[in-house]
Picture (cartoon, rainbow, N blue to C red):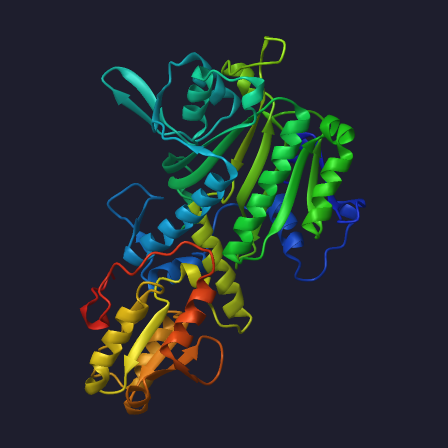
Length: 468
């Protein structure tokens, strides 16, 4: 990193077999994302000289756009983009719920006069929004930590209750980032962040939770389907005492990792990992992360009662299984921009594609059959009917392709007569003749176990408003 000297740390490449090599002595393969990530951290700038590729894509797909009436770094989400956002929120919240995270909701503003929070802000500086209520000074939260700390402070916790996990999906976290760093959805001033905090009795329990939550992050990234690299950052004392644990994470990851080792602890955590994506301009951004915090339970007087009846401060894990939801859409689109640059066909994951099926009649007389078919499959897939009869069949197919629709169904005389359909699959040449039940089974398999919401805009394309 460009401030490595100031932080008194050293960078290595950690391989799955446990071998460690100084990063300055390591030769990254040509085109390596890990190499691009290291280069960005070592000498890269957060500022963009040109708009990142995903901005044009998010606008062209009618997902998200700038809001000129708000502060920079605030966005408007159109119906298709908002649906995509809700699906990601639902998926990550489901992962945490199934893991045992108890969901809470906490305020978005806190007093600048609160003694512990004031000290915390000094220890963990951020670019804060400040506001006045009468003569009282407040700041807008930049994470869900504060509210969960307050809840945990007031909880009555026994050693038998641990680990305790609180979770919040913060739709409004605020960071007043510098203007030059604001570039589409990569870095915003208000964003949605799923945030979980876990209290653990001791180092061994914290390590178990850390590894389990790392696996949850892998589950998220696999569901997202983007290419990513990993960074592990650790204090030397912890690394020396828990070397096999750290190496075990690298072995499970199965790829080389950027390892940063600090000579001494300068932050509240002793161990953290991040999953990072590299975008079309070779800049990197972190998504998933988990950290072991050894400082804040003491600062905020969070305690539990041990077997001997004594009050102790637990360890705390900070985890965002997905990272910012907004940044995940950035990651998806930037990965597709890289694919386009390499001659590939862009896609969103099927479960996150706003329109999953477009049904196209060859002539007006086939339109009723298309509408009937849309009703039959509308509960298992998001379906539109292209009823713009002035367009040719070729233009209708091209329109669906430009919107990255996974399935294009064509209905003509033979399909009506034989009670079947002709389906084109994105990225695959040719078409297949299928029965309706056979097609429905394919859609269900494609959806898998991911969350689903039906379409919430007009299914007839002629009735759909334009947002730009």
